[in-house]
Length: 339
Image (cartoon, rainbow, N blue to C red; front, side):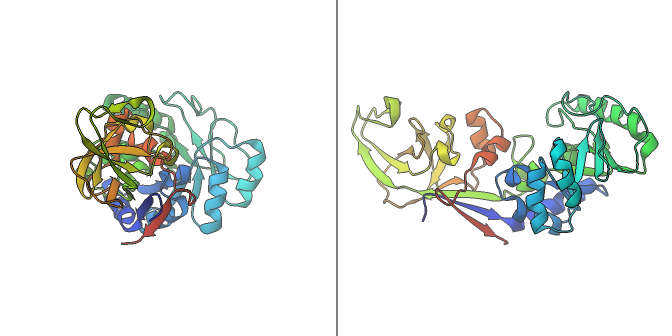
């Protein structure tokens, strides 16, 4: 095999989309595929989400949207991040929809964003009635995964400001709100992380009926015996206190397996083994209890080993780890399946 291989199960993604559609109970599902589909592949994931019941896709930039437009000529595509003035014409020509705060460009469909508590982009209030270019009104929830009370405040503010414009599509919910907060679902929900079978709450995603979409595998490229007092890797961060077998996996932080994942587990031939020493750019070490053969399979993500678990070790969130996995063919293979 190549140094490592990432497998994307589009069948699982489609089933996650259907799970979200059921949870939304009549609100539309808009699939968020920004950052190359959270590292899973934007075009493939958008196509699978649409087949699973999504009615639109959302990205962060005009450039991302234009790439999708080439593959999805008639799909509704919403650009959620700010567009530069020089990008408006391209957005108009490609029939994209833009998110704006105060200034509404002519000739392009827009969603006016209200800042109800995120404290970033968006208008503080609607200063005038939406014009004909406006097709939606939206806000961005700051604490849907942590503080339900503040979400209720945001939704109340948003509903109060937008109630006269019920003919427009109103949307606020992300994955966390779509799954757990019915009052935030409104007309549509912009769901990203849950589509990929990852929990917005950092817990077991199966609690919400979601299936992981990504599996990441490699192998033992080297197996060696460290004698007591010998070390592996930079800084001698792991020194064997007794004769210890270690395996070297040809994956490192340049591939998205971060330095702060020392101490996490991977599966070596199905058995949990601890990552030891300093994770380097192109390799990490695992502690073994015997001498397996070179080429023994290693699962980094999958078969019950989740990105949520790795994120807890790294002190981060599954979103960041997913987006950081590199599938450049010069370093890793990427396989898409539709099981």
